[in-house]
Every structure is written in C-alpha cells, then in structure tokens.
Amino acid sequence: MTKVRWLGLILLVGLLVAALAGCPGRAPAKTNSAAPDFRATALDGKTVSLAGFKGKVLVVNYFATWCPPCKAEIPDFVAAYRELKDQGLEILGVNPDEDPSDVRAFVQEQGINYPVIAGDREMAGKFGTVRTIPVTIVIDRNGNVVGKANGMLTRAKLDNLVRPLLASGGEQGQGERPSAAGAA
Image (cartoon, rainbow, N blue to C red; front, side):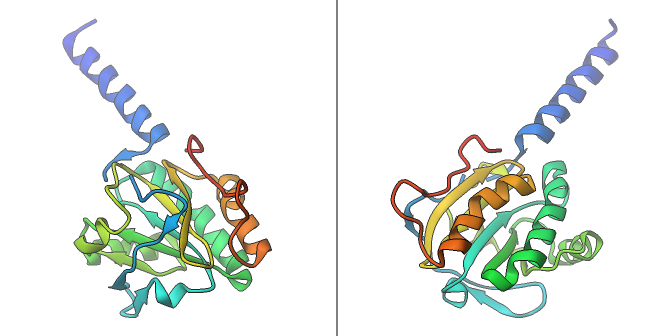
C-alpha cells in the first residue's frame, strides 16, 4: 500500500473512533455532589443560573459545532425538551470555545429549542475539566449532580437519566441514582 493510502486509512480510522467515542475536548464534576453555582448569558440575551433552575431537572450538555457525535445527539435533546419540559426538564447547551455568532447560526440550523451559552470560558470549567465532548451532566431538582455521560447520548440513554428524576418529583433515593458511565 502506498504511503498516501496508509495516511488516508489512518485518518479514516481516527475519524471513526472520534465519532463513536466522542470528540476530544474538556470530564465533568463528580456525581452525587452539589452542582457548582453559575451565572451566564445565553445566546438569546437572557441570564441563566443554577438558582434559576431550582426545582427542575437540569441537563447540561457541552458540545461543539464541528463534533459529529454532538450533531447526532442534538435532535434527541430537542425532542426530549419539547416532550418533557412541562414535567420539569430543562436543558442547557454549553459551547465555551466557539464564537457566539457561529454557535447562534448552528443553533438555528439544528432547531435547538433550549438555552445555549457560547463563548463563555468561565462556564467551561464550572463542572470540572471536560476531556471529551459531548459531555452531559444531570442535576436533580435539589441542585445535585446525579449523572454524567461522556460521549454521545441516544434518546433512550437520555430518558434513562432523566425520567426517574422527573417521575420522583425530586432527588432519587440512594442506590437509584442514574449514571451514564459507559453509556456513551
């Protein structure tokens, strides 16, 4: 095989691995701990904060516009938000590294119906160091980090993380906490 074909094969395998495992980026806060307080401005100009989500189940999703797994999971987040918002689900998209105007165009193109924060470097570290994207963090109605997933979430995996919290009307009992370790 020629050198060019080997390089092409290596590139193809690398892209496949990135698509299946998540894209390199920044791993989140530990589960079963209080969520860090935050305050930021979403793309729509509204201020979002942890306190503003009190009493809701909050899903924080770190993503990038260039990340194939991020793009693949967004329709499921959009559908889940549309379906479960009235039951207390809130979703917050976080893209700390890209220009807000680029993210705004992506949000419109993808039909994202939940608040998105873009270009806020302080928000990047709020939930710990994010090593891969997408990363999804689940916060219960009491403001505790109760689940996290590195890599792409399917709708079924997202539902497994949030539906028990929505049904319980509060925090899950010990031993029932959702965890997506290995769910990516």
